[in-house]
Amino acid sequence: MDIRRAFEADFDAKWPVFQAVIATGDTYVFSPTTTRQDAFAYWFGPGMTSYVAVDGPRILGMYKLRANQRDLGSLVANASFMVDPAIQGTGTGEVLGHHCLREAQKAGYKAMQFNFVVSTNMGAVSLWKKLGFLIVGTVPKAFKHHQLGYVDVYVMHRFLNDG
Image (cartoon, rainbow, N blue to C red; front, side, top):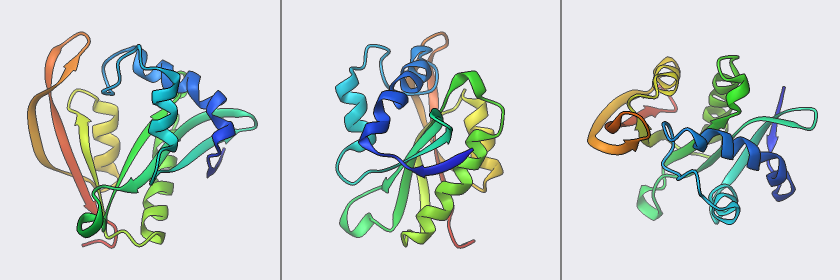
């Protein structure tokens, strides 16, 4: 597996992964009917730096990195991750997570914050905790889970220089 900057030309290969991840309605805020155009803007809009994990021509996973807030709040990074559901549990997310933390630190960010981690997404919550993130807030019933109804969302944070 290699991780590299994503190019707009990669979107054709990213699109099926995006669709597969959002289809279940249990981990991401996107509706399963999200358009290709909206998904493209999410990954390649202004201020985004996108990366892909590839095995040859196949996209295994992806993430985007950006400032969590503008101007005076721009010292904290934010990122979003997707891994092809067919290979979840193989360590791809962890490798992407480590890569993202290194890239964020290289870019000069002091911390990273995830604003919207669905509490029932135990794979993501466990991974982020393993990578040093703490739950610093809970937003009650902020996500409409496809099967469970309204569930909590976590705000997770970690410093990039160990504090």
